[in-house]
Length: 426
Image (cartoon, rainbow, N blue to C red; front, side, top):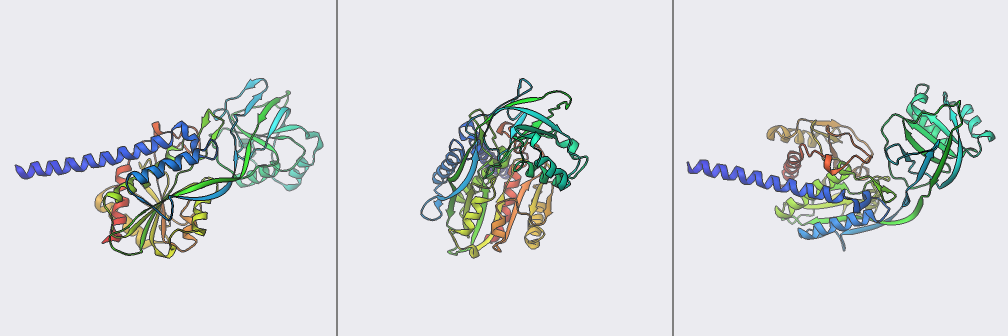
């Protein structure tokens, strides 16, 4: 009887500890996606507010700074939109992020413009040059139905055409229409022509179409931002280090009312980083643990690139690096980028998952260059980039919110990472 009671209390304690850890992770996501952070971009100090929050969390758990300070500063260029745009088409006022989005590289534009409905049926350079050199299009907006254009050409060809039209010609700008979900991003530059993306806007070429636009971006060529860098000294007296990374930045805001919360991308990955930071602060491992929260990922991996060029520890001392992005689902398991390269390590991850019955599957993928592990990989640092699969499809839009993030397999995913990291400490 006493043994049964003891087992019950051990199981209960484990459950309560797990629940407390998840509550901490939820707290991190809820905070980072709150309106005062303005989507953690480079407008209204969103990135700085997020960095200050993470630094305070490191301090709370007595995680030491890596180097002289928790912050590693660097500059980047960012095209920002502190003032909300105004878009009216044929007398109807359109709603930002619901009916349309401005192009992230949009320059300033202000005025009333006739709209030329352009049926784009070819990507031939002579056809595109004839559009660019057509003086009759001066002071007009070109409307292109991208869904229709894609019946005549492939997506990369269409992008090449629209990129040309965003930077050359007598026209004033572009209206690119599609039935696809509106997505946004961050960019470091401005195009020469204004451009907006509309959702399901059908214009009749036989009638006169008119648009009123007022878009006033602010290009900040030397915006100072920061990586947040923490350090847990291992008990083994070795310089060998496990590195855990996640980007805390997202794509920011357009004006004061519309912002992109970025719950899954990547407040969730940041919360997993903080989950592990808190865990290893309380259960100090044999090897050193370095925790790197990067800014600049969404705008071109700029934070991780800066770090690799200016490392705060010898990159050769890194035993393994785990880069965590989009950790908030897991219904269909996890995807492991570089699993085909570091096959022994991937097989270990698969084995640990099977032994402890944690995730539905651990899928393998080859190298890719779209997250913060890649600058390290280019310097021969052994690394994985891991993200969860399944669940919500909100991504780079206003719907990627804390309230709808399921945390489906968050605790099990955290356990898998801990089992994997701890096998280096045996």
